[in-house]
Length: 357
Image (cartoon, rainbow, N blue to C red; front, side):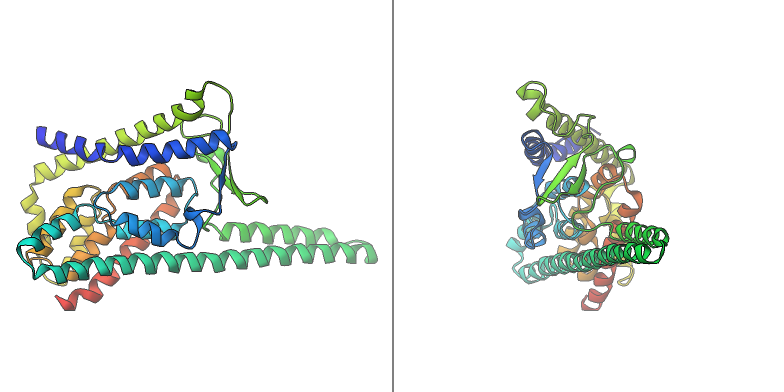
């Protein structure tokens, strides 16, 4: 059990630099810009899924955690989030490189596995970005049409003794329906303050994302009172500590489960029939712990796990990213849609590749 504790401590410690850097940066903008975070940057540019995919390939799960935090604050799109989740490989690449060093034949399989994951990440990320852009434009056109209809109704009312109220009410209802249907857009607003204890973010006319309401630990966004420490460091440190403790708890609990069940039993569980492997590997890959990526990668390297199963398992293995998403993003239905879509896409690609062995 001591090894489980130390492994959980080590895995959690690796997240701290990423979390602290991101929270300090967000805290700086909140304090200096009164909650305004520039929209037109890398985070929301067309390059975002590509950059996220590249960073996620690095051998750690810190970027998936950071991506979940940024998405919960509506600073990145759902397309970028999914791209990061799919591309995250945790310990897979170092293990494959180590195995290929002794068996050169593995270089080709390793390149194919990583190449498929990168392609999946980019396709999913940009497909979602385009889909939501089209949906957002359609919503804006519908709102514009509702406003025009309302204005025409008022003109008719002045000429015909008035009956514009019903038209105006109908336009308002249309606008509300369109706003609701455009949820999960690239810069969609948060839920109301009473339903969400994080920063609310909305797009202003000046091209900025305006954060308002209360932060993660109850502070006012954009509050300029207090010392330099309170304004720039207190809340980022508190939030980093909260996520770090949560990550340690998850790592320790899952590490204990793997210790009790025994890793060899998980391995035996995955070494089932060829066409069952993608499903089983996906279930194991959803475990938010580096042990899952290690097991999948080692079985793939020694030929016990097919390409399709390895792709499916590693595509959903976003480290602690999914767990942090569920914790930070309080819209349960939205989380379920993201996780369900990720699983469905991983299984579809996994089974498509299964005949390749």
